[in-house]
Length: 269
Image (cartoon, rainbow, N blue to C red):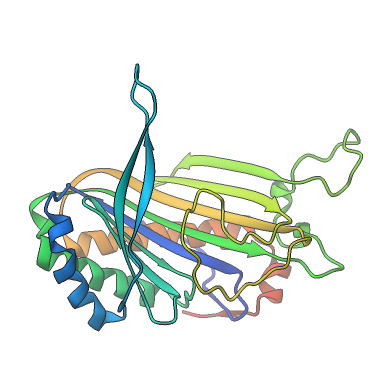
């Protein structure tokens, strides 16, 4: 699918985090293979082992909630701006130092190659590919988020609201040519640059926003679910399609021309 939009490089981009999740058929021996996988990942820029035990609540009909503990294997770059989490049935690549999609995709592909080399995930299926971008709008003192988002995203205008600075919480879910896209727009004044559902140990962030400033998070989540044979080229093509759709929505339908100027947008091929 070809999406039409102007391509920009944002020199002062508002990105807080980019995340890609690949889900595959469960590999029961994955915990035994993690040491070998990490030995290879160390040479690819993920030397730091920040694995930890996490708690998960499991709810089944007719039974009380059950809390189980599991080890979460996670490896990071030395500067704490790249993270790779590996489970029995998924891997998640996260960065707070995103530049261009090509660089992100190159790392994602290499991580998949390493995990497949050791765990042979190609014998199973791919069940989900998801790409998620979280942007933070932090207006200057004389501005509001309305200068950055297109009119359709400003929320209702009503005299019922006695405070002109009422907070915004919007969510839009719809089908795309590739899968499903969710756009969530939320606000907070706690300095939280990530949505609360992204439970992640702190990483290095270029954005440090003090509590008391009203900021707006634009969380764009595009994913496809199903069951397909493992094919690395197909996975990367699908990830690129998800990225292209997010960009088309972002540049065509979400942000304003003024926002692009503030963020130092430069047209690129």
